[in-house]
Structures are given as structure tokens and as C-alpha cells.
Length: 129
Image (cartoon, rainbow, N blue to C red; front, side, top):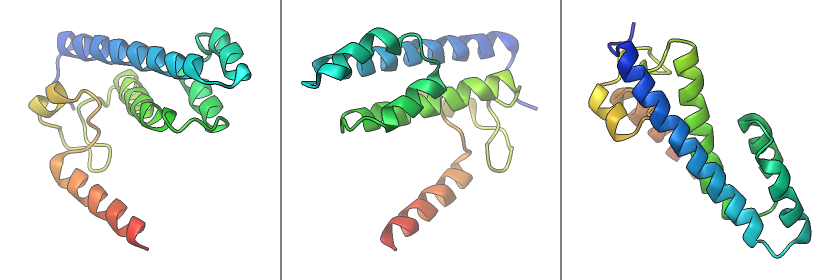
């Protein structure tokens, strides 16, 4: 099981919650800055959406600036779910412990360095096809 104690998990959850709030605020700002009138109307309802609903909603909207923020939001959500499941700090591929320093640098880290290298290589090869 993870080497992280309860206090550390609470700290990481707090960081992730703060990051999630910031990304959601950025997404609201992007919608608000849009020239499309329906995007301005949507801003009022975005706060009511769960993270999953927000991600699904943004897939239907053609605003290129959203892509990076949605990817960050997905990583944050995955990390929060892993905390709930008691799997935070474990590699999502091999389930080995992720070095705490990596989590401190990026609380959304999902893979150990070996599995991350394999994942990135596979992604790169898929793009080349």
C-alpha cells in the first residue's frame, strides 16, 4: 500500500482541490471571453456541473483554448478518485509506489517513472502512425 500517511493524503487532496478550482475558474474565463452568446449563458451553469459533466460538456464546444485545461482537469479528477479509492501514490499501471518527491512536484502524477516512459513512448508511436 502507499507510503503516504493520512496527513499527507489530506495535504495532497487540498492541493488537488485548489488546482481543480483554479482550472474551473480558467474554464469559466475562457467561456466568458468567447464571442459566442451561448457561451456567456453557459458560464452561469458551469459551476453546477460535476467534473465529469463539465468535461463532457466541453467536448461539445469548439474552443481550442479549453483543450489544455480539460486535460489538466482530467488528471486532477483521476488523482482525486485514486485518493477516494485508497490508491493514491501507486502507479496506475504496475501499482508500485510513486516516489513522494514526484507527487510533491506534481500531485497529478499517475505513473512511476518506468511506466511513464513506456506510456510516453507508446503515445509517440501512436502519433507517428
